[in-house]
Image (cartoon, rainbow, N blue to C red; front, side):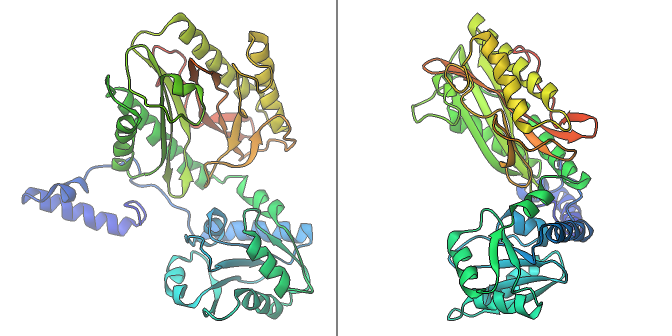
Length: 417
């Protein structure tokens, strides 16, 4: 449980820490009274999850599905509130077209799983010498749903699909991606609010870190500054990718030793989690005085990010955003397509409970943009052997078009905005 997940507990700790500080309490107790950016954050509650279930059921009826099934991960959390890890022991959430959610869980894990349930559910357990798939099939049979189409979440593991298929000979086990995506791709105001707090914390952490970097630091040193600030603000660190010098030319890093020195490019790709929702923000700066070439590349990327933002309009294909950026970069001599020097990866990805979610800003994507969808906007330029620049901010689609979670910087002289 994070510090902001239980208001009553937090209130008690805050009051206790304040009293303890006056009595010469240890540092950990005094720190509990410090205001965090997550204070007052509203987490996802039962009414929100009930609305999600109703949306899923409406989609199941439309698509002719009897039920959908997922295992531990963000989709299980999204619908049920259960936060669990995947293992060789299946733990399944079964959402029927009508009626209560069903949970099929290992018997010895039942108490812990019940504690985290955020919706009413029928929990059925299996002992170590029993088949969870038979238990799941019996649950569906009792609901008179065992002969229909059962949709599985797209990341569910193959051995679970095989087990369900074998236990449900009269059913068709099919992809349920249209239901899961149909719900999760469209964020509610409550979800957007959590993503906004996560973005705000990451921006603040980036500014704090940039103000405190020094010559001789390595990626771990800089990442530690980010992590310390992020945790103090009440968020969970998701990742801090720090690339210095030539390593910045490789989007996800290099194993070569990196030490910060005068004139080097620093690319920071960082994110945190607030209430189950992610941020993902990249900033690039130069330690010292930038060269004319560094300025040009930075400015080209800054404009590329705006080209993507302007292209992301309601009703257009997601792929058209990527195509617009590549057309602009091609006109400057970067590329073409994925060729380097240029943009070697997609312009952006979906984001929400997972840092990367469907769908993406990639040329071939035909899904049309709709209000509530969220994406990263990160059309970097990479020059192997020299350096790379990536500016990344996330957007959410409103009925009037895109809106930033974090405002991009406009000049390399103020790289954190």
